Length: 236
Image (cartoon, rainbow, N blue to C red):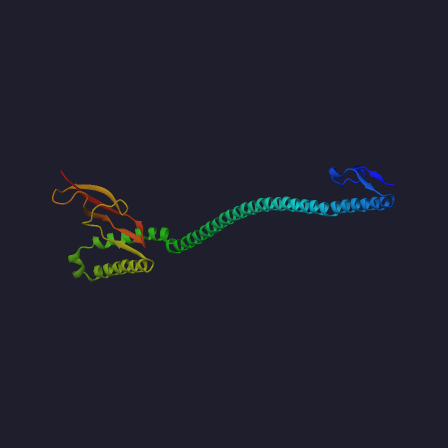
């Protein structure tokens, strides 16, 4: 006895073979085969396709993670570069401040050293200026002696020699401390070195020429201790 088996029992059977005549003894075997095929197909789809999909998803996730990581690293590099630039700038500013401070300290040291040296050199300026009056008086006394009587009068000559020796000794002491008398007659007037008391008319000499010295000037090292009091020339 034969049976007609509809194609819906075997989904894999082509439409042209929708009806096939089977013997009863073969029906059970065919159904069993159909179940095995269907199960194997399902297993094949599940194991193979699922694995492929999982692999693709993993690749996609890895690409996304790699992209995110690269973006993060780029941002981190930019931040670090900015930090380095800022630190280099701050370091340069600190170095400049340090160098300026060193320069200021060196200038201060040199200025202090110069002040100490000036104090040592010019400390006697006021005292020396007071002694100039003594020298002025001695010079006036020497110029008051009549030259003709000095040679004829021994006593007068002795007094003269004593005054002259005292004057010379003071000038030597002054020189030991860097104090010197400077000449000015015939020079052009210099307000830093000279003090004009009078003017005299003389068209034969350049205007401003010093024609007479009333009181000698003195220097102490490179400074003017006392300006010379002079008479200068002017034109008519």
